[in-house]
Amino acid sequence: MRQSTERLHLSRIHTALDDISDEKRLKSTMYRYMTQELAEELLKLDDAKLGGDRKEVTILFSDIRGYTTLTENMQAEEVVSMLNEYFESMVEAVFRHKGTLDKYIGDAIMAVFGSPLPLEKHARMAVETSLEMRYRLQELNHRREALNQSKIKIGIGINSDTVISGNIGSSKRMEFTAIGDGVNLGSRLESISKQYGCDIIISDNTFNFCHDDIWARELDLIRVKGRNEPVSIYELIGMRSDSINSAKQELIEHYQKGRKYYLQRQFSLAQMEFVKALTADNNDKASMLYLSRCQHWLQTPPTDTTWDAGVWTFHAK
Image (cartoon, rainbow, N blue to C red; front, side, top):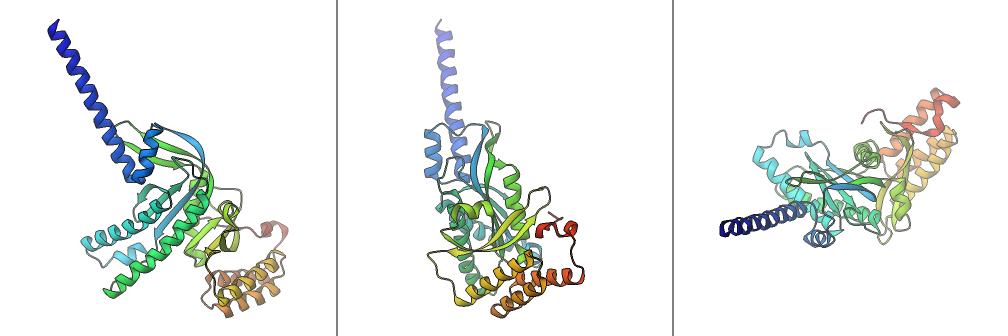
């Protein structure tokens, strides 16, 4: 009887120790992806379990441009040091605006706003994060230039959508993630940002959530690989609380007029407006892109079949 009681007592101790170990493991996992404050709030709600739910969120992808070229002449220790400093600063921006780090993908970052806990202004938080990342990168590059090191350039894509989000894996090793078409689109937007010479591109879904709070330029109507429905995309310029200079305003004005003519198939008039846009900023890659399209359509006028309502299709990922 005494031995049976001792065994039961030991069993309870082991169970308690396992529970403590599981809790520590869970906390350790969660602290990798979110602030301690958010993690503890989640634990109180007992919502840190395996499984996923459909949630309205905003997804942010960022990636270092020309990473291979940037690092090809660097020692391994230098690469690790650079990435650690870069990630430390960028993830801090994510956490400051209540985002959750989903994962690192090589030199890329994926963050989610609105999961695992709901976030009322998830789109605005993601937008503010991207602008802070832009500012932090400028500061980082100032330090790198002072040390005669190459500047880092990044691209960011942001999309808002309903996705499946939650914890996957096992009780021993969980990974927070979000999956779905909306996630894929965010990744595609980051990838194509370089085509337009922009550092931050947002989808129409994200724009619609926070258009009153931001300065943005409508860039294009595109169709990306793996998605049939076209999406309008915007260059994120800044918050409405920030002023924009007259040259940028002039650029946007002529660019938007050019796009209006372009969509009406008035390519000669569109071409004139894009030239004016380039007079305001001769490095504007988006205007150069449209000039090239106008020249193409002037030489080979579109039919109703080839025009596709002005949608531009990207075949590569």
